[in-house]
Image (cartoon, rainbow, N blue to C red; front, side, top):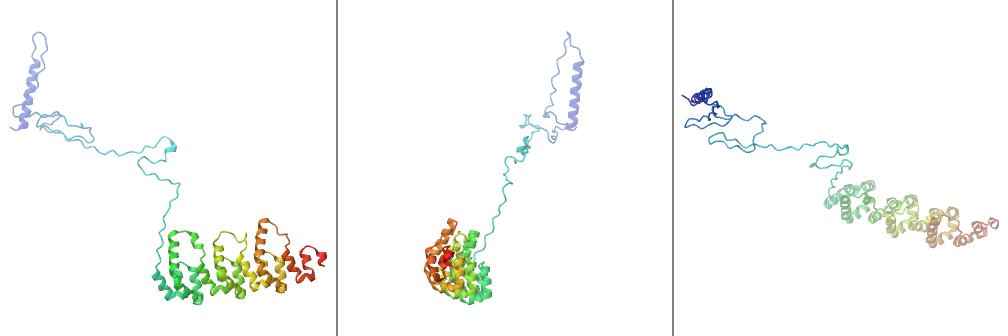
Length: 362
């Protein structure tokens, strides 16, 4: 007989005896006490509560709440395995306040959409002195090294002038390390104002030999003087020689923040007054003295005398013009102008016309 069959027969006999005891009447009208639990036969271990006929516990249902600690079971019964606790995933609940609805949940990185996204530009690679010298030797007359150093305007100028007739190419042999260092410095700082800065070495390279055509003045944004040099061949060479001494002042003036419309340049006044253009009154036109400019044009600088006098008094004329711009009117008459008109045009009464005495002038 198998173990299962024996257990079934033992259970049936136990239940039969229990029913027989309950059916017998108790003397004295008292109810019979409950029968004690049936004892298993010797050699067998009782099964835990809820076990099947074979003595095995059924598997727990999925999602059933099992006790956190195993219960005290009889020896040899079913031992409950510890429960596996799944990690709790935090759930984000929208707040009731509408103003807080767009805030991210706690634990997330905040991102402000109001700030623009900034992208870091990739720095430009540094230029090599060796590569620059190779381009200077091979393609220097056509401006190859200037194109390499991000100076396209200079490259085009060298291309059409064969390196400024070879003079600019020769000078670049000695100043090329300065150009390479300047290029790398401008690329590293990422400052657009550095590209607009004028340099003294560039101005002198353009001055010789392109100064006769006013190239250095075009480079320094002196368009008026550049055009004048272009049509007068550097004021017949005189203005070109004066610029050799005044070049540092021209560069400083170009890099300053003072607009040209407020103050006139001392260097430009000197060039126009001393050069042959002074015979035609160019410095007077520049200082907005149109009357004297026309007089010098038709009298060749009042027969050369006024032209020579203006060599020494042009600083006074410049200071007078700048001061008149601050005051706001230019109706004052000046003694030096009156004497200049008195000799040699005093016989024609020009000094009286200047002093608003037309009757005396006639």
